[in-house]
Amino acid sequence: MRMRIPGRVALAAGTLALFGATTAPGVAMATSEGSSSAAVSRKPTVVIVHGAWADSSSWSSVMERLRKDGYPVRAIANPLQGLTSDTAYVRSYLSTIDGPMVLVGHSYGGAVITNSAASDPDVKALVYIAGFIPAKGETVGDLAARSALAIPLISTAVPDGAEVSIDPDHFREVFAGDVDKTTAANLAAAQRPANTKAVSDAGVEEAFRTIPSWSLITRQDHAIAPDVQRFMSKRAGARTEEVNASHAVMISRPDTVTRVIEDAARSTR
Image (cartoon, rainbow, N blue to C red; front, side):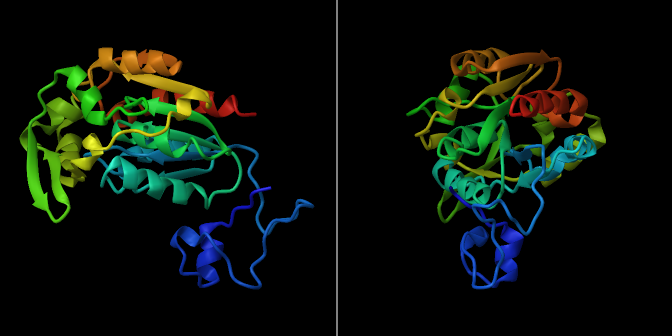
């Protein structure tokens, strides 16, 4: 039986391992008899992985609704440094969580959960929210090219290549067309740039082949064309729903996003 150690326990024990993956003498752990130092929730933990040009704060309204309905929620600060390294980061993070999980990926975050979930038996469902779903050997860039959407980007040289962000003057029309102007301006100002490796690293896993998946397609999306979302969702065999919303659907339609996630979570029981 694989046993996990909550990150807070590992940190309290003074471990230097990333995410508290190891423990120290005297730290209580679950045993084969079922004893544990922490109560295990009856509902799966919902783990949210945001995409490029966003951060976890954009999920606040959805997280509030999930917690109100009794779901433990985690929102990962996706590094946005490339699919290979981001996948390793998320896998390490998942190893600190006890019990069943539902992984939610928005935009580029969909590619990350597709690759990070395949080796984790505790991931019981995948939820793609306007998300990329790459096949093995395929890049996010390959899929983005299918969209034929011109996204005005600003590139910045960094030691490890280049990072890109959306031109703030065009952020609302690309990312958040159905969000009020003030909120969209704040999102544009706070957007996190993504390393170009996010679109050039090829996928190596296809978690959707073995894990049930759900997909919410955004019909008013100017970042990932709806037809491309439909193509990926059909190929993945995902249970699919569509909504009249922009790429920032978790902000403009939090009730719909929450319902799709909870539909997936209920399937794990």
